[in-house]
Image: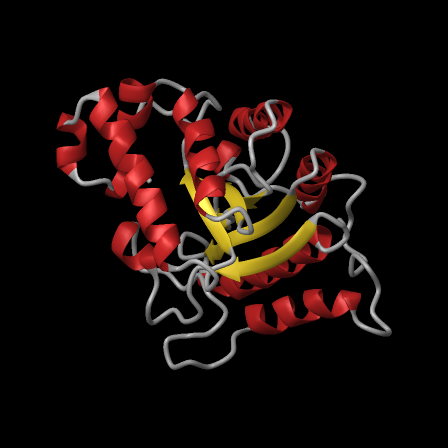
Length: 255
C-alpha cells in the first residue's frame, strides 16, 4: 500500500524496487505459508477518477506492477486466495467503480492469478454526490458483474460514519445502511463475507483520520447498538425461515 510504504523506497531504482517488492512478497508469504489462506496483494491502486493512482510504484514500474505482484504472490503460495482491495467502489455508477471493474476484467483477461476482490465500504451516512453511500441496487449490481468475471467479492472494511447527521437520525441511518447493504450483498452468489473495520466506537480509525464519530456496531462501553441488530438481521436473511434480500428494494433506488 503506497500510503504506508517507507520513504526510502522512493529512492530505489526501478530494478531495485522491483526486486525489493518481490523479496517482500516472498518473505512475508513464506513466513505465514499454510497459516494465512487469503491475501490482499495490492491495495488502493486507483485514483478517484478510476485511473491508476500516480503513486511511487506506477511512476517507477509502470502499470505492470499490479500484475507482477499477483504473479509473485501466486508463485510464493500457489494455494492462497489473492485479492485486490479498494475504496469507494462498492456500487456501480461512479468513475472509480467503473475503473475498479475494468482493472479486474483486464487482469482476468490476461489470466493473472487474482481470485477475488474487496470493496471496502467506509460509508458516510451524511455524504452527498460521489460521497453518498451507494444504494442496495448499486451494490448488488457491482457484486453481480464482478462475480461474472469469476471473482469472489467481500465487503472488506465496513464502517458507517454518522456524526455529520443530526443526533436523532444517526442510529436510524446507520442501522438502515448496515442492514440494507449486507442484505443486498447476500443475494449474490459471488459474495463471500463482510469484515468490519473494528467493532467498538472506543477504538476506530475514523477518530484519528477524520473526526470524532461512532461508526461501528458496539458503542464506547461495548454495548450493542441498533446497527448490531441490523447486521444480525441482515445475516439472518439466509437462515432457515429468512427472506433472501430482507425485503430490501434492489430493482430501483429509493431514499
